[in-house]
Amino acid sequence: MDRTPTTVRGALPALLPLLAVMIALGSLGVAALLPLSAHGWTTASLGALALGSGRLALSLANPRRTGRLDVPVAFATGAVLGWFGWAVLVFGAFAGIVIGVACRIGLVLTGRAGHRASVASTPFLVAGAVAGVALRIWVA
Image (cartoon, rainbow, N blue to C red; front, side):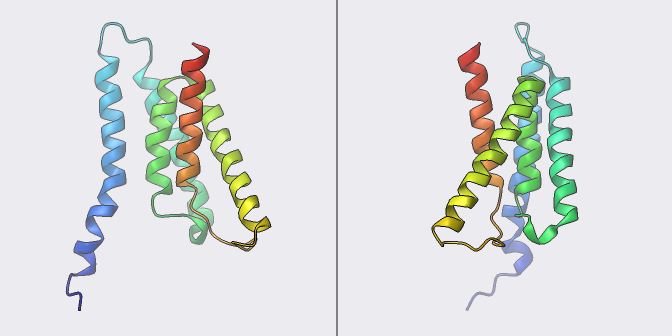
């Protein structure tokens, strides 16, 4: 029998996304202070605010379709994508949406999920962020 209180069991996983946001913004802030930094902490923080608040608005509109990590991960990936510029932020967010839609269509077509199934968008957002940063590195 599990006698662990639910608040203790769920406390660490609830704090990890917030820790990721703080680490992302903090490390980008330190990197902005370096003399050879070509990127801006301002665009990183505005990118985090843009992508995170957009995902927060979507989760408030339909909370049953939002995973627990979707909003904090959106803030962290927005910071990282914003560090590389607005074009990378838009491309990474759009790529995450396209990857997520393609995977959901694949799940529906194979019969593994119904058309109303709830699928967390966190992995697809991270995949889009990786695609955006990879494209930025490849182009530069």
